[in-house]
Image (cartoon, rainbow, N blue to C red; front, side, top):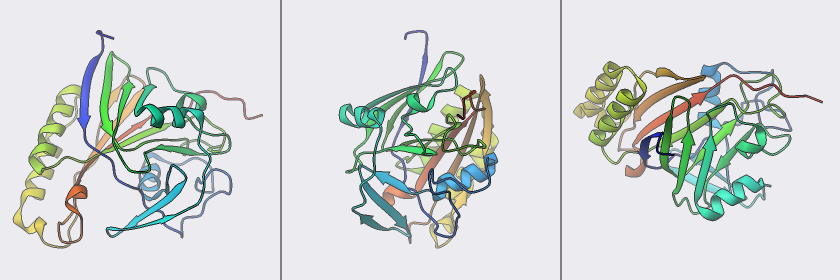
Length: 252
């Protein structure tokens, strides 16, 4: 693997929110009405329910709740969590099996029940890769007309830097590696570093910045939340969203 460039995202990922008013299908947990736009998928991924080793966890306003609802997991998920190490190949569009998606499900989430981090390596086109210390990795097929059966079209990772300076340096390194717009990073960092942003609310978000990596679209957004309502470990998040066109599949 010496021919691959490694880009490390040292951090963790946030829990997801579920909004009960969002209509879903009974089988896959995907919105009714077929495929979703990239913008819709960003919103859905930020609101989706997180199933962790058989426990449904909800997070809202810093409060967490758990329910003992058992949920089936794939062999891929079990192996990754057992060894605390996951390898995903995105040099070509992955199959449902390669992503660890169960039949009839539109998404899959990898996370330890105790939220311990695990090593993740994602191989990308053009000899690149993401080497990630993550607490969650998620695939979904929400961008397809048949999410419950189609191959995945999205991988997202949430990384939590310890400080705004760490976030800025991390994003600038990503900009150098993938050709992202550095101006948006500087604008976000300056706004988030303003003393006014330390007051409640506001949440300071960067605009989405993107760049192609082979057949993939890499999109990144940074967010800073006020320390008044947000635990320190969750105040800063860098959201990576990799999307691609679905591979051909037989719906029968």
